[in-house]
Amino acid sequence: MMIVSACLVGVNCKYNGGNNDNDKVKEFLKDKQYIIICPEQLGGLTTPRKPSEINQAGGKEVLIGNSKVISCENKDVTENFVKGAKESLNIAKIFNCKQALLKEGSPSCGCNLIYDGTFTGKKISGMGVTAALFNENNIEVFSEKEL
Ligand code: SF4
Image (cartoon, rainbow, N blue to C red):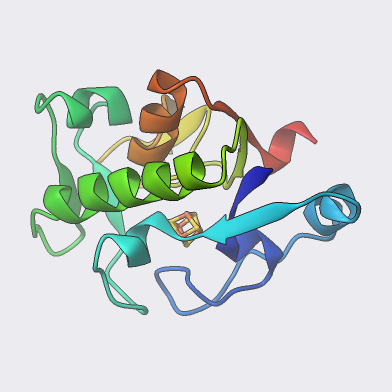
């Protein structure tokens, strides 16, 4: 069983109310069993919501309390992101998922790249909060860019 970012298969859970519907992802998943999640919704955030970025760090730093997730309106949403990651992990464990296909670049789901916290569109190496928590719990994470 695989965990998949819900926005990748067309669920309108993205911050702006849209999705990241991806034909390559749907083709890849055609014969597989999977569960869709949106960590940011699971963390109690609304859709639509203000975009957020990790403040000059990665998801691992957020999980150990060394960095925060901040919205573009300067609201601290760290608690929502950590809660969403934990709820996502809970779902992954219930269904014994060993792999997660997640949306690249997201402060929750990014597997290799995230925005740098300046809201200027600049990306840096790093994982989102949920991807980092999955990684720490031996769930292999990969993005739609790696298919
Ligand atoms: Fe997609 Fe993940 Fe962002 Fe939800 S949190 S919209 S699943 S990238």
